[in-house]
Image 1 (cartoon, helix red, strand yellow):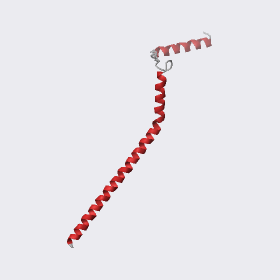
Image 2 (tube, rainbow, N blue to C red; image 1 turned 180 degrees about the vertical axis):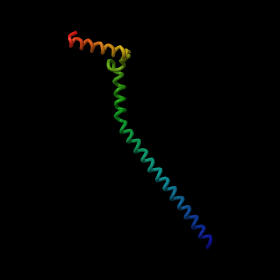
Image 3 (cartoon, rainbow, N blue to C red; image 1 turned 45 degrees about the vertical axis):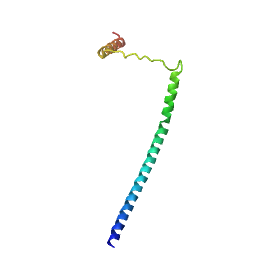
Image 4 (cartoon, rainbow, N blue to C red; image 1 turned 90 degrees about the horizontal axis):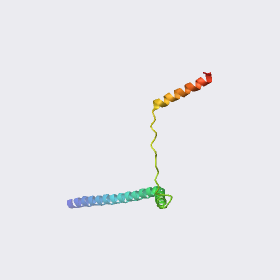
Length: 101
Protein backbone atom coordinates (compact mmCIF):
# COMPACT_ATOMS: atom_id res chain seq x y z
CA UNK A 1 0.00 0.00 0.00
CA UNK A 2 2.86 2.35 0.70
CA UNK A 3 3.94 2.04 -2.91
CA UNK A 4 0.54 3.23 -4.15
CA UNK A 5 0.92 6.57 -2.39
CA UNK A 6 4.32 7.15 -3.99
CA UNK A 7 2.98 6.20 -7.41
CA UNK A 8 0.04 8.55 -7.00
CA UNK A 9 2.34 11.45 -6.06
CA UNK A 10 4.60 10.69 -9.00
CA UNK A 11 1.66 10.63 -11.41
CA UNK A 12 0.24 13.86 -9.99
CA UNK A 13 3.66 15.50 -10.35
CA UNK A 14 3.86 14.36 -13.95
CA UNK A 15 0.35 15.71 -14.58
CA UNK A 16 1.29 19.08 -13.09
CA UNK A 17 4.41 19.16 -15.26
CA UNK A 18 2.37 18.42 -18.35
CA UNK A 19 -0.13 21.15 -17.47
CA UNK A 20 2.70 23.63 -16.98
CA UNK A 21 4.12 22.64 -20.35
CA UNK A 22 0.76 23.09 -22.04
CA UNK A 23 0.31 26.46 -20.34
CA UNK A 24 3.74 27.54 -21.55
CA UNK A 25 2.88 26.55 -25.11
CA UNK A 26 -0.38 28.46 -24.94
CA UNK A 27 1.43 31.52 -23.65
CA UNK A 28 4.00 31.30 -26.47
CA UNK A 29 1.24 31.00 -29.06
CA UNK A 30 -0.61 34.00 -27.61
CA UNK A 31 2.63 36.05 -27.60
CA UNK A 32 3.34 35.12 -31.22
CA UNK A 33 -0.16 36.25 -32.19
CA UNK A 34 0.39 39.57 -30.39
CA UNK A 35 3.73 39.99 -32.17
CA UNK A 36 2.11 39.36 -35.55
CA UNK A 37 -0.67 41.85 -34.79
CA UNK A 38 1.87 44.47 -33.74
CA UNK A 39 3.91 43.94 -36.92
CA UNK A 40 0.75 44.19 -39.06
CA UNK A 41 -0.28 47.43 -37.35
CA UNK A 42 3.19 48.91 -37.86
CA UNK A 43 3.08 47.94 -41.55
CA UNK A 44 -0.35 49.55 -41.97
CA UNK A 45 0.80 52.75 -40.29
CA UNK A 46 4.02 52.84 -42.33
CA UNK A 47 2.35 52.15 -45.70
CA UNK A 48 1.69 55.80 -46.68
CA UNK A 49 5.34 56.70 -46.07
CA UNK A 50 6.49 53.75 -48.18
CA UNK A 51 4.17 54.79 -51.01
CA UNK A 52 5.37 58.40 -50.90
CA UNK A 53 8.97 57.26 -50.89
CA UNK A 54 8.38 55.03 -53.91
CA UNK A 55 6.59 57.86 -55.73
CA UNK A 56 9.41 60.27 -54.95
CA UNK A 57 11.92 57.79 -56.36
CA UNK A 58 9.91 57.52 -59.58
CA UNK A 59 9.62 61.30 -59.91
CA UNK A 60 13.36 61.75 -59.41
CA UNK A 61 14.03 59.49 -62.37
CA UNK A 62 11.87 61.56 -64.74
CA UNK A 63 13.81 64.06 -66.87
CA UNK A 64 13.14 67.66 -66.01
CA UNK A 65 11.60 66.91 -62.62
CA UNK A 66 14.19 65.10 -60.62
CA UNK A 67 17.92 64.99 -60.62
CA UNK A 68 18.31 68.74 -60.32
CA UNK A 69 20.46 70.33 -57.73
CA UNK A 70 19.65 73.21 -55.47
CA UNK A 71 22.30 75.75 -54.57
CA UNK A 72 21.97 77.42 -51.23
CA UNK A 73 23.94 80.61 -50.78
CA UNK A 74 25.56 81.19 -47.40
CA UNK A 75 24.09 83.84 -45.16
CA UNK A 76 25.72 87.24 -45.44
CA UNK A 77 28.00 87.95 -42.52
CA UNK A 78 27.35 91.49 -41.29
CA UNK A 79 28.68 93.35 -38.31
CA UNK A 80 25.87 93.95 -35.80
CA UNK A 81 27.67 97.00 -34.36
CA UNK A 82 27.84 98.68 -37.74
CA UNK A 83 24.16 97.93 -38.26
CA UNK A 84 23.31 99.52 -34.91
CA UNK A 85 25.46 102.58 -35.72
CA UNK A 86 23.72 102.95 -39.08
CA UNK A 87 20.30 102.71 -37.41
CA UNK A 88 21.25 105.38 -34.85
CA UNK A 89 22.60 107.62 -37.62
CA UNK A 90 19.43 107.22 -39.67
CA UNK A 91 17.30 107.94 -36.62
CA UNK A 92 19.34 111.10 -35.94
CA UNK A 93 19.01 112.23 -39.54
CA UNK A 94 15.25 111.63 -39.48
CA UNK A 95 14.81 113.52 -36.23
CA UNK A 96 16.95 116.37 -37.54
CA UNK A 97 14.76 116.61 -40.62
CA UNK A 98 11.62 116.70 -38.46
CA UNK A 99 12.98 119.41 -36.23
CA UNK A 100 14.23 121.38 -39.16
CA UNK A 101 17.99 121.40 -38.58
